[in-house]
Image 1 (cartoon, rainbow, N blue to C red):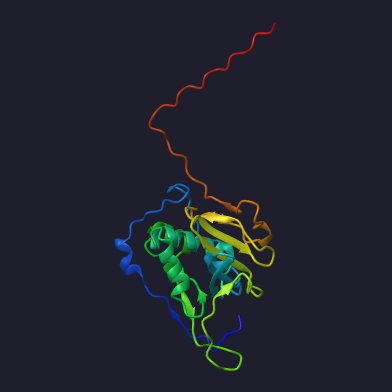
Image 2 (cartoon, rainbow, N blue to C red; image 1 turned 90 degrees about the horizontal axis):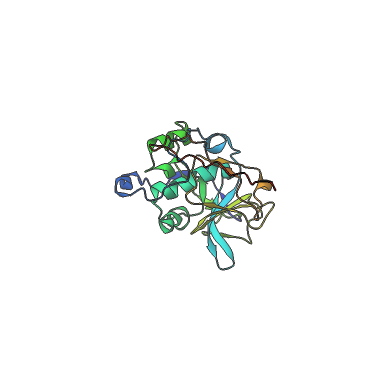
Length: 238
């Protein structure tokens, strides 16, 4: 980006929790409610804070979106983004894109646990381990000459200094390891936010499935007896 922040001043994103009660939890995720909980393993707690990324909409020739300064690895963004879609935004991708892209000035310093608002308390606990912090936008952004910077969208042609892109398609999140590929695999919106996510860029080849492993689930006991498996007949020898 051509602009830089003049100071570390930040302001938190708008709190939408007051609207949670009116939002239906419309999107069921893959996996069982009996899945073993996990704290944000490398996710929201331990990843490299300097990893820069972009969250974008698809366009006719690529994508355009907003800069995110910290915590760009997939094991941070992929718990947050599917959970936000499934619960806080109740499956409304346009509302989610407006919040993450259109309503932002110059970019995000970080995306926080407010994106988990409206979700089940157990899911929130399993992802955060009790560590809560708000999303924060960048403020006081200036050009190299000291003049106020204009708002700037990042496109596929301006990602040279970034490491990851997250493109919000109707069918899921395209995750692009920008230092290795121009495209990436798509993570479905109904992916369980508790899934294990690989952060190694080489694992995100565009022509292979996303390197995500769903959480292990406890087996459910059936209320009806299973039908006996028929014994295969041996073929008589002649």
